Length: 311
Ligand code: NAP
Image (tube, rainbow, N blue to C red):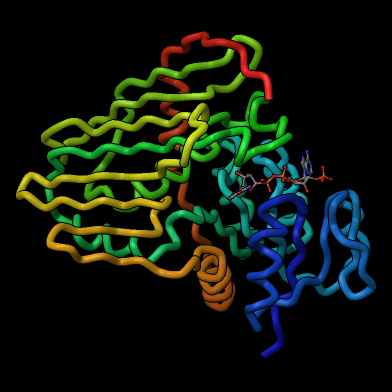
């Protein structure tokens, strides 16, 4: 079967660490081009500084994987859909809900696949947690997502700019897990966004959720000021007495009585397997739930000014 010819647009950290190896390891895909100043120069895979140059020069493309920061994603995706290409979108899929809704309409109109990827959902532990919680009432859920921004985002100015999401850049990963495993609707009731005096986006956030399916507190704390080891955990207790704990960003699940689900790192290979399925079926997968929760946190959140952050 002829592989899908895919171009990477936005050749930064995630493209290099995850997309390139996942494409190389999947016979259903062939890397056809790359866009970005850091893209390697190669005869086999031409590189370009701008996506429009690439669209004009590279023939026989089937799809693109758009791995830029979110603020650039809408314009690029729109151009790619206009050019008749299927689109895989890195998370978050756009800066606003209106943008992603418009892309979904455009892709549907052209019968193209649009795929919003939420990499943290692509762990066997997440599927197992969702299955364990299905149909249950929640007594308590606590999300803790704390890491060092200096360690995980060195030199990335875009995360602090308007539309860069700040601490919600990693926090939205937790929300993508929560929206997948929580057995009912989840709403942001209150949020406190801690924004450094010298920057635009929050460095920390505390969120309280409500849900008709929760009997107790459902809350989250995101913090980028953690200088010791990172914490990426979600703990859940159900009203009928089940406890489970997701750790390592959703890669490991412990259910009471010692049952553990843990897999080798498989998020991006699974994302490309799903992309191939969607392309075969000519379907889209557009999940906006994590972006909606983030938007709601910004809408209802109170903003607290905290000490300046200097990298
Ligand atoms: P990055 O290292 O800063 O790379 C961003 C890339 O996008 C670079 O190739 C850059 O091109 C390009 N770019 C930046 N602004 C652009 C614009 N306005 N128009 C076109 N291209 C632009 O960022 P990253 O860490 O890879 O993150 C990219 C996305 O992946 C984000 O949405 C992030 O949330 C997501 N993600 C990141 C990670 C991670 O561990 N880093 C994990 C999962 C998901 P130039 O080099 O030419 O400037």
